[in-house]
Image 1: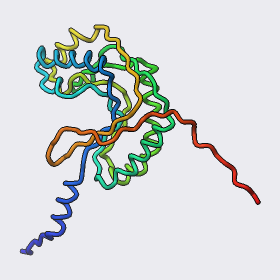
Image 2 (image 1 turned 90 degrees about the horizontal axis):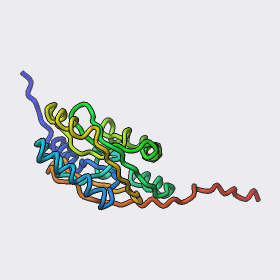
Image 3 (image 1 turned 45 degrees about the horizontal axis):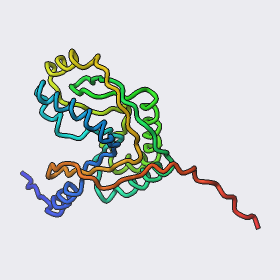
Length: 215
């Protein structure tokens, strides 16, 4: 029987990689009024339906999330900042509730607001997807259906109860977005997300092409 040799250097490398792998989220935050309104709904879901995680996270709209080595993040951040410079602040309108299969209940966006967010996300993706495909292959996701989560990982019983009470309730709110916020969470320690960068939406004109002198 052949003996098996473990290379300690390889194990050390794997451990080092794990310690520098983080989950990153790019989000829009709600304004205080909208945050309070959605926060009260989240608290109700926790108390009335037993959705334990509902009230633990601040309301936000996720634009992008990925798992990537922190040393490979800089190119992603530069891409996001480049897009942010040429996007003007805009208003997001929220309109009613909806659910996903799998137990997620959320606040939906009005159609034109959803389109604005989707257009922004497409620009973010165009600027960074080549780098992400190389360094975070299979572990990155851009938002395709903008929403603000109320509760996730709900059981069928919890979902049915919430649907009866909330699916046809009116919910209207709006907030102006002026910046994207980048959050970071350790995969090793399981710590909560912490803010590491803010990227203001500046609305600058596109980069002008200047023809060089021929002589």
